[in-house]
Length: 317
Image 1 (spheres, rainbow, N blue to C red):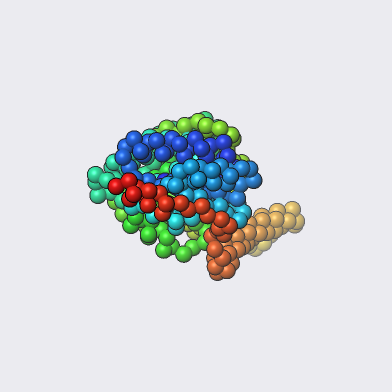
Image 2: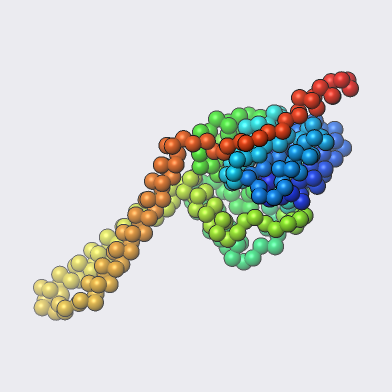
């Protein structure tokens, strides 16, 4: 059985269309399936639409959070409740082309492959700033962790072995793309173009993307901490050079009052110290969040008719 995990946040207009397209694709290809929608604390009628689709199709399983916990938490909730031998994670707005699910499934079923990665051949209608930021983000991840996530996405198929491995990972601050690569296993790639959204607008603002990038980088690499060490080393070298120069001028009788220089040096070193403390403080705050050991998400309601769907199939047989 294939589990299709679809996180949704304020996607009331896309729920039925996504469910219908995925259902028809899987039925036409004789694939036993379940569709898991995770309502990530939406403020519109997303949960109502999920509930309605679950009532019409017992293979649709719905989870709703008590509030918005973020896409990462929604993905891991889907992995936790998935019953399939493999699962596919895709976006509700259908920017991940559903027909690629069949290609992924066939590769998985006919080969000894555990992870089929969806790799973007184009990033859609993204601005220059967004593209440059994405390159910088993935560059930092690659340098810090050794994982090349360029053009990677959350759109991928995972074998049950990979699902179980991810479900055993206890950290609260998750970065799914990196974690699903870190676990290893045999991989293969499927390439796709990012489609236009079917309905609505993207929920990712510039602010939320920056927060997501900072959280992902700090949860998966220590590069910012290494930047602090690098800045400290550079500051030490500059201080050493200035110190030798000052001592030479003093001994040779060429020293000046240099009040402005002193002020500038104090401002420079103070800025470096505050910047470094900010980075260290951010990592400490993440440690604090982890040791509290709070759940990644809180489920407020579930609609699960999958046993009824199985019973109906058994009765038909």
